[in-house]
Image 1: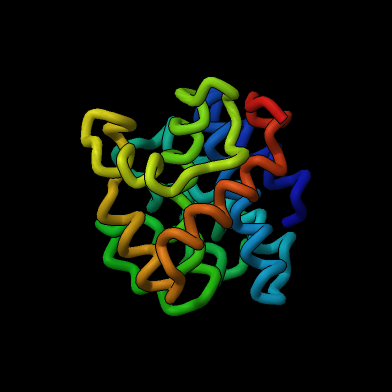
Image 2 (image 1 turned 90 degrees about the horizontal axis):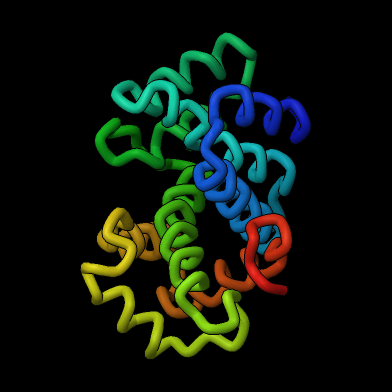
Length: 183
């Protein structure tokens, strides 16, 4: 599956602009990490793009239904396993670097996007870790974001949380115009 086919599949199953934007954020973070780790950026990007494609249509069976659909389409097992592994409740072990990275960037991407929206500049430039960490501790901010997953993701990936946050923020800022943030 190429990026164009993956995006068509995402749009077929997902109508919510916020979920599409989230998929684009996770795709961008996955591509950045793939380049950093000398992995296949297109493959990792597609994994990020499709990780929640079934969520809107099948919320009770996500990501199981998505995995089923991807298998029918002949998508490689490592991509499907990474997508299954991003949801803790599936109990799918994250054994590959791609799976660990997807888990590490998923919740963080959502948090950073929400953080950008409350900044006066509406972007992720010139971030202050103290401010980000304060928002991470504020349970009322971005309530849907699982802070434990953010911490666990960085641990599993073997990266410093602060460096991870700044790296993913830069990845998202690189696609600012595509996700309605100021450049």
